[in-house]
Length: 438
Image (cartoon, rainbow, N blue to C red):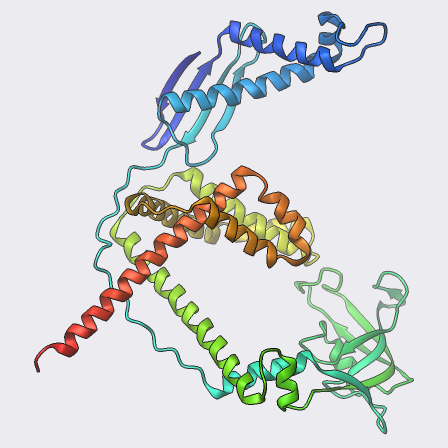
């Protein structure tokens, strides 16, 4: 193997590798021998197909497999022998693939900058005072009641009011052309702006059960829903039945239904404790982020462009998936992704810089996540995943995905250690001030 290393910038490296022809031949021979044992050609006993026929039928596939394996093997070997550690998987550029005489390729990548984090000791974070109001507790309990609401058919009224639940059909027409696929079917609909889009709630309010109601709406060209954008639409609704939502009484029986509570007072205390815990977690999250921003500010570092690009691509893919799920066309998605490019780049740069600082701190602080801790976290993720359990179990069956989670957990542990240290420093400072003579 002949290896040439170029430094195209302070962090970028280009490693050009030429594989010895004898190595290429040995790999080709090994691959064809394996293929011969497993393939059956008409007129030949298993394991006795001649090499020339194997080359004729499977030559392209074999060459592709051999190139892929040799590139991986010799890239890893060259990086290891020269102590080069890419921050992102190298980009491979094949330059010559005339097998078995020649295989030449380049691996282009960025290395991690040398970094010793300074000025992070002695930071202090005062503990935030966490308060939960009675109003916040009432709102949570009301939400619990909403989840257990039942429907009761309205008697003595046949006109829909805001907040009702109706059994109705809803259709949209442009002229006499229906804008909805398939046959209109009756559905239960809650009559509110939060539950119904496009102003359909306004069409339903005032409608009479047993009679069709119609209303026209004109939507601007830039309207979010592409099927309605720029159109004048006639909505036709037919209400069959009207229901009211009935909330359960706010009493001790309701509290018992929530589990581990004997009465309403206990439920309120449990809700308050949950809110306090959540508020403290949010306060700690803000404190951790503040500490990290301060440390990053004190430790300027050059960020490899490949790290920024990887983070930006991930953000763009996430946005595209969200927009696609919302029904936007590919042209609109591409336009919104382009419009967000600068914002994503800045966020990606910040995220990459944070990662470099945290990874350097992890090494300096000797923070590790052992296999038991990793397994416990994966188990928690799977228990909380619901229907996606099997997909996530398969995801974490791959070593590279487990290691990515381990790296993330290490960074969490670093930040948590810094936070606890900063809190302790603040507490000791406050105690010292209290004990100082006046």
